[in-house]
Image (cartoon, helix red, strand yellow):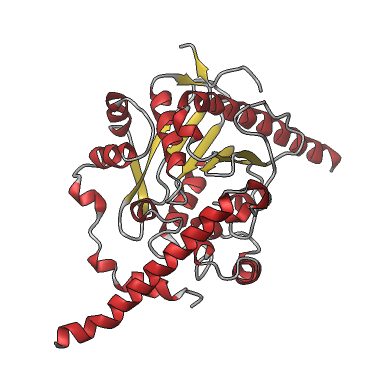
Length: 344
């Protein structure tokens, strides 16, 4: 009887959190049915080819922290990193070659310090470009764990890169939020929205204020107790510091647009499935952190539902287009820098 009395409050708390999540997900589904009513914060061409023919915590946050020891590491049941990679990427929707995926997963690695809160590895794949002027492009997907098609596109791009000689150099982190993927939640295991946790210069002043006032303390948009408080955020920042990308691509769903934070003079290549529409950026977001604060362009690919999964070959072309925009952006930024130098 003592055992039951000790755990009853915890069981009631967990049941309450589950009910709240269902209500939140229901409201989110109703919103996404009408694109014109969507606040961008609510949701989460050229022909040249990329390839050469050769206590600000919500109450539920505390409950998750207390129960961490009860969660088994997902990768422990799969053995090697290669097996974990195959298991995780195979779980995502869309068609792919098992043999090609095995080949890719044999080459993934984990950067030191890149583990989630539940100690799942945040692995990445890298392929260097053939051009002496190759741009370094960092691709991130599944920052929001419930946006499964974003990971499917990254998986397709990784398989493609393994079979071509790309002009640019690519590093792909297909599952940036593994705990969120396992839980099927936008947030990570600590109930933090990773894409509001980056240490933008205005984070301390605006992130929590924005969350409380603009988002009405929506748990799905919680930016965290402090900037860069999350392991997943810290992992991405380690990649940015070490890889020093010229260009970043962040893949999301479900708005169905291409949103670019970068030089305004870019001539955007046409990609018929997704129009180029600016959504803006927000305190703690990757776009504001990298473009506004660090002058590194960010292309946010907002897939439209499962469209990208059903037509993955079309999105291989978007990889080529993204590479072209990366080259154009770097050219413009270097020219601007040279003009500023000459004006001094």
